[in-house]
Length: 262
Image (cartoon, one colour):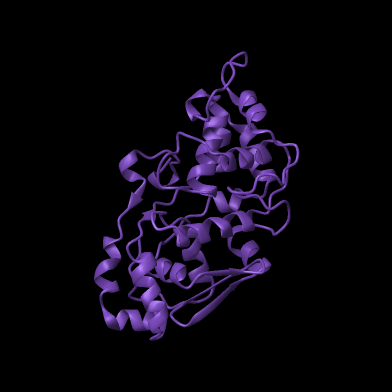
């Protein structure tokens, strides 16, 4: 698979520092274009966002899963309407992604932001057009797993371990079967990506894995929105979904001429 298609990079590939955008960020003229001269938003950018690191994007191809005899996992992911989202690739506008995060709000189930004066309201249709995601299903996120009544983290983990007679004593990926280990990478590097500690699962990771494997339809838009807001709010949380957000930027027609891209 090509580099951007890997889901298991080495530790030194897990994130990239904010230095690529620093030269532009210190340019007052660029800031005024990005934020239309709004001093409060520029202040938010400097204090909360500009120093944050970016999580390098990962993708996984359904065709690769099938070719590598992970057809069962392929079918589970397709059934959850995740194919388009998991395979997203393209240009990344590093500075503009940070502008998007600086202006990001989530209210009444609607994600909103603005970049260079272009107001973005991520509606039900936008989610579908950009990533093939639909706003239906249970609202699952890391800090709220009780919405899936039948989920029991210990029972589920014991079903996933390599040696079925062995009781799992912790949530370490190394104890799992190959297919479940691959699923953990999909969850922790693409669906709810974090910059480090992919080897230890939390309850939120496990409930998402359970839903994927057990026919529980999830409102992925809510899961992603919650993860985005957490990334903005928490000081040391790296910024995820950079390709996804760049797709939003393109979708809404933001002028990207002259902007830093990868």
